[in-house]
Length: 113
Image (cartoon, rainbow, N blue to C red; front, side, top):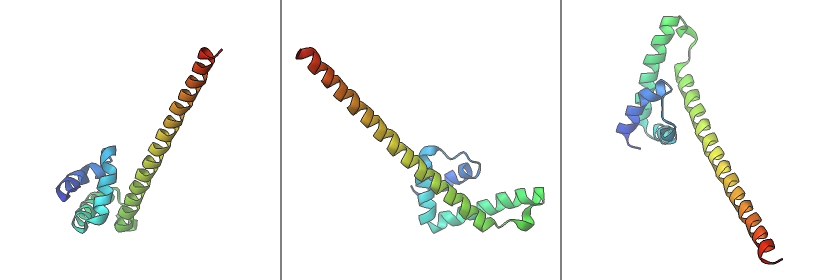
């Protein structure tokens, strides 16, 4: 993912609208690109800070650690999705193999009485 695309996705990330197929690339790029991380950090501090001022919650908010925790949560979500996809495809493959074996066994019964 390029910086331009990652920076366009920052707003989607902030509002929880980051497309599922972009999450892995986004978090990977943010973690590896200092400029994009700083852009996200600034946007996050402004957005969350202003919301905190409106709600009078800013005095006990640690914005830096909160952003890090949210990025870690996103990484965990991406890893879980990857694991779930792996197991889903593995189970599907095993199901097809089992159906194939059953078909071959039934075919043997039909052809060799």
